[in-house]
Length: 207
Length: 265
Image 1 (cartoon, rainbow over the protein chains, first blue to last red):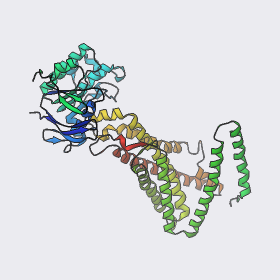
Image 2: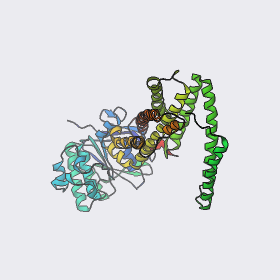
Image 3: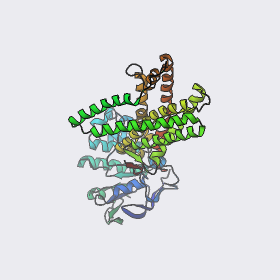
């Protein structure tokens, strides 16, 4: 099955001028910019969580043609601060994710862990696993490794890149670490003064 | 079985108790002395006025006037529901949701009770209709105000959680299901507690009044049971409607959580 590209069509937020771009299947578009420049706002607009200008589409489907929750089920955002509502990790997972959990360095009993004893780094990685367990068709990642130490960061990056490539997910990845962008990005855009600028670096991805 | 008539000087004797209390409140510097006297005065004035209104209404007994009185009570109750919320929906929704759900629940339960259960003739006879509606509105109002307050406060507090659920592709209904349940529970608790404690901890006001005015306790008790049941139904259904409509209004057509539709009171 061919995964459709994710397109932004004259999409604008109150911090960002209208922007049109396309993220191909399996492409990782990294987004950087000073804090408060509207990176998270842009992700929220693409996930259709806030009122915004313009639209976004995933192949033939757009934010207007799909109902809100169906759009977000397809174009899934993983926020920097994840929310958890059940007692244990396992209850949040719609299906077993043993392989993914193992690759991220969790032991098999992680599903029984109580949410209360998770560190912020564990929460962040488990939120990624949870999102992918819902089988989205595009990913919006808001600083997915912000709370991780260097080793875990590399491990998580590798796992994410592999899954994104395997499932051919168009991905918008907010990052601030230059080295990380070099490692993962197929393309890199920088937000400055309400505009998105193509950045020189980041072209050496695996695409 | 006639009631002993109360005259104004007898009420004045009771008023001296309030004045004595006010003196103590002033001395103890509680800072509510003025409020105490003012609201005591308001009680006297407001109830006296409503007494005149009811006398006139009973004398006329015309359906139009009974309906107008009911409408006025409904609108005042709707305003009160709105006033009791710390965060209200903008653009008249705060008032409309409370009023609408009380209209649907309290009004229909009152009419149903009048026609099917009590059966005075005519069915809109103000002696039955107005007190019944008043008691239903008063209690429904409390339930709905509590429920709506809990809902808007909860959704503000748990915004991250609700949006986290939305991000995972849950519908608005799933994303706020817990909050809705909590709000409905909050609206229902007062009447559940009141029914559980009725007669044990407190003698309900209406029953006490009927007994004072010479009704046989057995009959007064039956009326009180009837009132409790109708209040439970009115409050319950009113709360369901109010929470359903208000929670829908907190999300827009794209199922986005719209906290900007709430404003602080």
